[in-house]
Image (tube, rainbow, N blue to C red; front, top):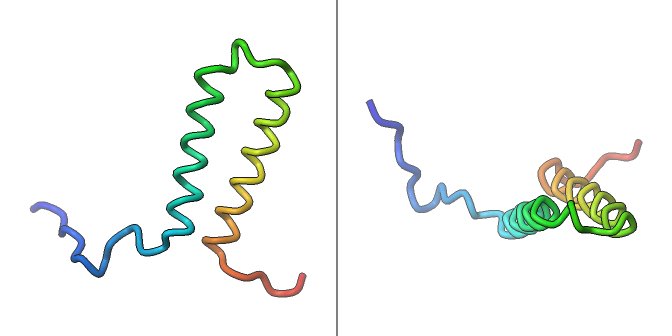
Amino acid sequence: MTPRRPKKQDERRSNLALRELLDELIQHVRNVTANAQVMPQADLEYAQDRLEWLADEIWQKVMGPRNSE
């Protein structure tokens, strides 16, 4: 039995903002992976900060607005 194919309204990309953040994260990781050996330490630290920022942005998009902590 083959898995059910999503109908048009079940399109994974319905949350375009999340899709764009995920695409940006993937592009960032690929770039850092390809260039990490030759990147200066400051650039590596910035890349780490950006990775954490993107992960946080994605988490917030997935989880929605937070209640007061």
